[in-house]
Length: 228
Image (spheres, one colour):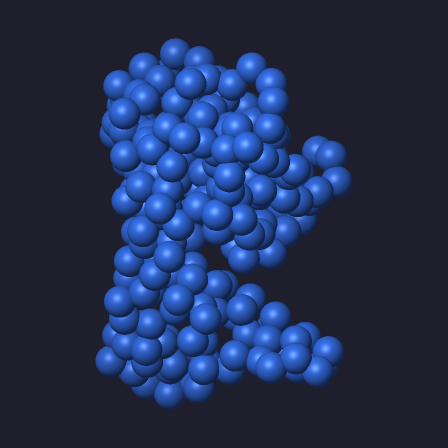
């Protein structure tokens, strides 16, 4: 394993597929041999600030293309064995293909260079695969609050009330709808499409009920019994 990378190894019934993903955000790829479905103008997300004159291709689509090609003929419910290798430890899961791809795609998207997803990049450096919604909430809010601490140290105005975090997830909810349309129009397999939908499902939950989700989470941090 190279420093700053995460390895994903999929064992399917008929073959094995591996990917090595850097945890730092990539520079946006404005040239190269990329498929037509990855063109920025092809169903560009409404929230995307990029301009075609400066960026010909959607950075998320470019980042995901190898994975989509590798599993183009597979279905979402195929059972696979997935081994994830990080610098600190290894993880192993037997699951549906869509679950393994969901975990991988979360890492790919956060490190794609997409300006909308850049605020998720910090968690890529501490990537933990196969997280539940509750675990994702804990990691996301925790990472955001640490960032506010450092903003305060620099003399900037921290967002302790999580106002901008909720706004971010509302934007991600829209990105989910738009990017899913791009993916669904370019592939025949449902494994990739379902994995994308699963990745963004948390944004819907957080955007619509952040306070309620945190109230349920309170007991884990305050050493009290909770209604969970």
